[in-house]
Amino acid sequence: MSLSTTATLTGAIPASQIARRTMREVDLAIKVERERLVVLQDRAETKTAWLIRRADSLWNADQRDKAEALASRIRSQPGRVVARLSTTYHGCLHLMKRWSYFHQKVVSKKFKGELSKSDHIMAHCLLGFPANEWDNEESELNTEAISRDDPGWQVAVQKQLREVFARELRQLTELLKVLDLENKEAQAKAKVGEFFDMDPFLNKTEREIASCERCIRVLEKERLHATKEEPEVEAALADSPSSTVSADAEEAPVASPLL
Image (cartoon, rainbow, N blue to C red; front, top):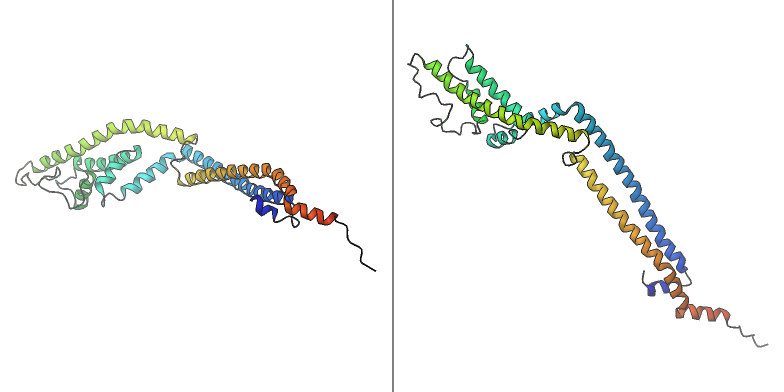
């Protein structure tokens, strides 16, 4: 509040009362923000404790669910989905499960030399090719070059497909050795609460806590400023012309009326 504005209020509200009223308003705002901060901190601590318990008992189940949710989009975005699955331990496990299914199918005595249409499409998706968008002549899974009239046709088809599937399994097995260590490290960090960048709710709460703390610091500075200005305002009002005139008017003698 400027000095001139404060001076015009002389006689209506004392200067000290004006300053105190300003500080009371700031104090109330600080009180509200501190109460809000306590609520936010309690919310963050509760969520952290819950995530720690979950990381200890349900880590593998949660990571497996994430991998399966991502894998459900493999037919629409095979290249992108396979690349992302290959970066996590549980994603690799999912890919290995799929390739293992195909490998066991072709080495089985029940294999008749052909994959079903759905298996053929999925196998190409696992290789990163969109369904029905690959060049069949250049596909590793294309067995049309092997003549069906050849007595060894079924064995040759089986050998070609088995080599592709076994190669993918070997690559994933090697990759899994590295990702297994990363997965264990991630779980260990989660167990001690080092996952603020992994949980959206906790991230949002931490941002709100930081905002609340900044607001409190600003209000405390404002209150300190108001506290320092209070004696200056009172002194300025005491020396102002309006104050002098008011005081002289009260001390001036009143003339007696003529009889």
